[in-house]
Amino acid sequence: MLAVRTSGDFVALLEGGLWLLLAWSVSYSAAIGEPLPSVAMLSVTATLVFVCWAHRPFRLTLQRYRIRRRRTEMLMHIIALPLLLALFFGALIEGLLTPLSGQQKMLMYNVLATSGWLVFALTLLIKYLLFRLSSR
Image (cartoon, rainbow, N blue to C red):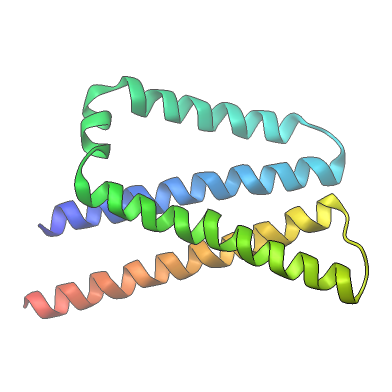
């Protein structure tokens, strides 16, 4: 049971890191005005998604319940909640202070998504440690 739990956590952390790298590459591309970093990261992401879809052992592993559940939790931490918070804070800042450019909005989303991923990683670490200590 511990191996399944650990593998689900590890897959979710890696996938979250991959999506974060893609989001940060978009921000970096917008800042320098060159699309190459985004295209490169999108190619890496698409290759990994294709390998996970085409390689049967990966596909079967990713269909396990615990891994699907962890991946869903991770997506809630790095996509759903940061998008809602960025929308709220963006509207608040634009209404009270000054208009934001697209780069600033993307940067705000990236910062919120990264903090959400770090909260997710710390939560998994604490759960892992508690499970290890309680199983002894």
